[in-house]
Length: 49
Image 1: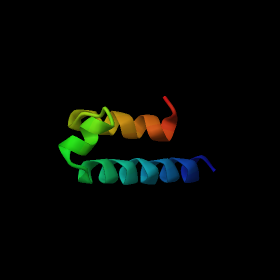
Image 2: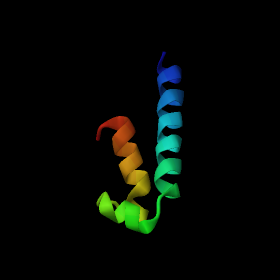
Image 3: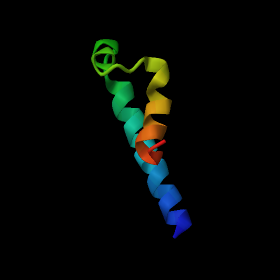
Image 4: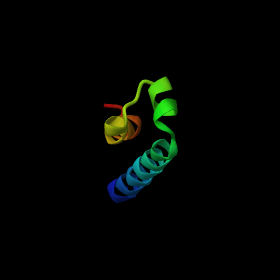
C-alpha cells in the first residue's frame, strides 16, 4: 500500500511540475509563483506541507 501511495504521489508531483513549467513567467507571476518555486509548490500540492 505504501509503495502504491509513493508512486501515486510521485506521478502527481511530476504532473504538477510539468503543468507549472509550461506556464509563462507572467502566468506564474499572476499566481504568485516564481519559476524557482515550482518544485516547492508541487511538493506542497502533493504532501500538503
